[in-house]
Structure formats: C-alpha cells, structure tokens
Length: 220
Picture 1 (tube, one colour):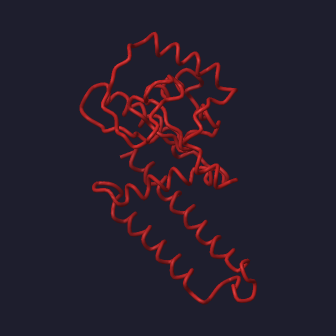
Picture 2: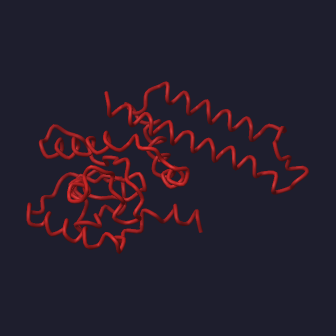
C-alpha cells in the first residue's frame, strides 16, 4: 500500500477538502485577471492539467510532494494566503518547500516573471528543517530530479555527481559482500533487512544532498 501510494501520487489530482474554498477563490481571481493564452509547454508529464485552474498547465511547476500546477496558479495560491510561510499542497496538504520549474526558461517577460517568482519562493523555504517522514515523502520527486540532472548536460556539478557515484558504489559493494550485519544464511529472508536499510539510508542521503545543492544554487 505504501509503494502504491508513491506510484500513484501523480495521478491524484483532487483538491483536498480543506483547500477547496481557497482554490475556488484563486480560480475565480485568475479567470478575472487574464484570458487563456496558449504557451509552449515542456511535455514532461503525460497529464499536464492543473487542478487549480482546471486547464492545461501553463509554465508547469512540480512540488516536492510530486504534484503539478501552473506556475502562476501555485504562486497565486501562496500570495493569496499567508505568504510569510510555506504553503501546504492543495492536494495532499504536505508542506511545499521546493518548486521545480518544468518549463523551458527563455528571455520572454512572462517566462522570466514566473521563473523569478518560483525562485523567490524556493529561496525563502527550501532550507526549512524537514522531519524524517517529510524526507521520506519527498524521496520520489527529489530522486527523480536528481538522477535526471545527473545525466543531463549542464545539470549537477561534477563534485555532486562524484559523491552520488561513490555512494552507489559503496552500497553496491556492501550488497554483494559476504559480510552482513544480519547474515542471510542464518536468518533467511530476514537477512535482507540490513540490505534494504542501507539502500534506504543511501536514498535519503542522496535526496538530502540534492536539496542542499538546489538551495545553494538559488543563493548564488
């Protein structure tokens, strides 16, 4: 059930009942402010609809909890509430401390405005302390972005890539090593518990490193 939640979380686009009133107000505000304009979109998701405006996402951004919104919609949602604090995701109520732009940044004024607003949000809240459970909930999104940047040109800097490779190599050698904290020969399937625990700690560590890299990049 826990794994299924992670696999299906991007498909769950229903606004949380506690946020429906606020989202309705934002939707009406956005509809009154501007007409619908079709922008070039970065097709990363198969479903690019925004649950706030109920239209195809314009300048899409992804939250650290893995939900997709229009850049303008999620920024308006933040500004409409208590903009001094990080927002809760309109869908899952998880605290949003990172917004990942999923659109191509160009010199166009509207693109730059949304991009600067997203960066402003990230500078304020990306360094907030996270509980262990919040870090676990962030894992799918952060790892996906970290590994995608790792293998892209102009992505993560080399020192970070080397650290990830070293971590993966260390985990690999531990998994293939005959030395185990809980030997499989004595405990059977329970002997794999330490292997899963080491792998889990590795993924947590990589996600923490990636979050630090994103935060440092914002303050350059």
